[in-house]
Length: 530
Image (cartoon, rainbow, N blue to C red; front, side, top):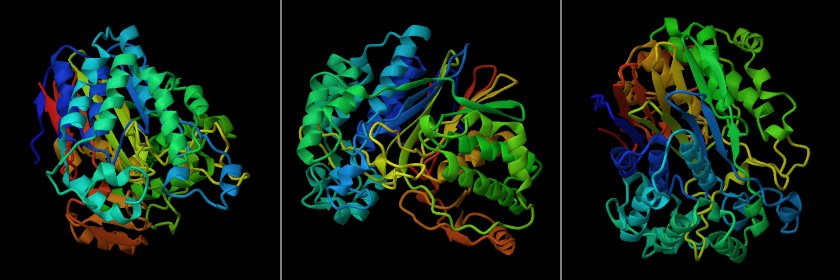
């Protein structure tokens, strides 16, 4: 479990081994990291359907071997306004069902933008039908259900079974499929074939877009053909900050990429690198830094067009010094703030030339809205739950406005020439696990697989869990939760390798071109290299 795979010509890590292998196959055939990323993303969208799909959103950080780091944001905007819900007698957005399917799905647009960048600047030339080939095969011929999917489907069966299209797609004789049972998605396969033939932009304009819009109208979603056609992907420079000898990059608002950067910046200011990462002193400081970052997130982060403060101002060193000064190094600040849940898939790819991508995509809650479109077979996200129906709220719903996202894909470039892609799924857990991975690999010097496998902590909510306690896996020395409780933390000990801690991964490329990776034993993924 602690062995770190190494390779020289390319490496992929993803939360499902079939997706890792799909990306690796593209690298073997001469594809670059972006092209392998699209193969990985599309395969995940089929074989890990409770966590992701083409009915969701996605974000990329793309680093060429030489040149500027780029950000691609595939975030869909709202196709509804508060009047839509008032007309239905609703005072809040439903968690599931057609009225929860209120935002455009942006993931496919992010693939399209990434491939355009690949062709323009990375010499990418692999045909789209090849990149989608394995996803189509798994959707048509079937894939074995993972333990994660089986458990989630069983747990959510009563909540989702009566929603349009769900039972026909993800249940067998009314029950969740067992681990290893073969599941097919023929309607989704047809949609993927249509994209392969007509191009990814066909998701938003063209034959497939028309079919999607008709499906959405049939089930009662407020998203229309005009909303699909109006969708725009965001591209540009990512957020970044210096942490020691590294420049760390992450996604821009409306994601919480800012939060992940702030936690790392505060950790450095609080002296975390001077402590063993498993010590109560280090964990306490990281948790307190997380509280500062989360409070800022909940007050300030939403659609960037609506934010009163430029996001770069929130990474100003003087402001970060002020946040760090609020942390008591010996005592926990009381915490009962509601957090952000969410299911997600993160994956990373680095190719032989040193091109690297860190990518995250999601349908938000397990199976998103729970609605599977009748003709196109797409399970649609419920990311619009991030909106409030209060028109005066910072995240108030407006048609055309982008929702807040927990998604954020980090990438670090070191002064000595190393590149690291790393990340995880898991709502509030994402920035915390990212920090733990960075701390273990960079400050502790742990091998990538050891850094991913090591016990983790989590403040607040993650997917499938609504408590706000500080959770620690039971593999920690029992003295550590005791000491943290003595510092004022409300501690909860959870399982040895608890899935609530996320499905993390990491690849580090050293200056000599050696790639080293780690995949999470809490998930169904793997590292694939050659």
